[in-house]
Image (cartoon, rainbow, N blue to C red; front, top):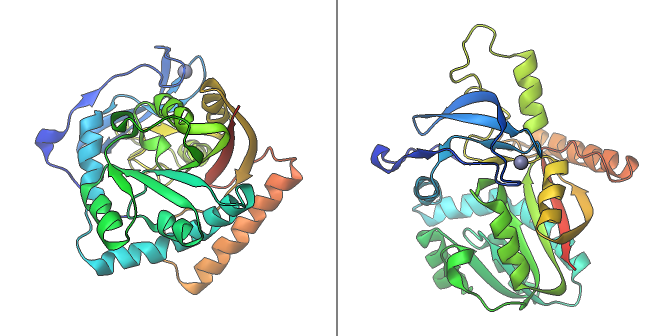
Length: 306
Ligand SMILES: [Zn+2]
């Protein structure tokens, strides 16, 4: 949405093993600057997950997201709502298809409640979890939603109460995504499902690096200007590693859904139209490849609790 810089005193970095398989062996793919720190992008030699290492600590990421979501005026929130609207409609269409009779749903990282607001209006019983105090207050006071402030692991919600959990554009920001998936599984009823959306751009980022590359630079900050790399993501999933982590957390990921363009461009009409065409193209390719090929820069998976 916009670049925010948090106070330097809050920022520290940490080296950690692979968040999927725990292995320590990793290959350095490049480095980049984020929040005035030089961070690395590495690939696990065992499971081939691509993740940021060293990365900012969880506290530093929390401060970053507090600042990121700290929009002050209703106008800005409305602008944000308008921007998110296409995603929300698509997500609701899918939810309605998978859970047509209504039910109880949880949105992890519900932000300003745009998705929950619409879901509630459609008759779903909704709960949200959000780390931004301001977004949480807005959701509860302005929208009349039930959104709890904090991280899932701190909230101690009752087990097996949700028919569906959604986690959109959040899992790839987390230091321990596997733990988050296990927490969510605990909350789902048997046969309930998770809808998870993450970015799917690492192929593009690495291709860009190979073609445009860093031939004139040394390795320091080589990925800093890569337009496909979102610098505030700790994990760079592809469809294989997303499926792998869902399987490791004990889900049955039966269905992958090729998603849509997610470039951050001003949405003039012509660009909106191009995005729509590209979205159809990606969906067609996904369907024609027997649901294997996801080229869209973001992807949604549905995974069931067995
Ligand atoms: Zn690994």
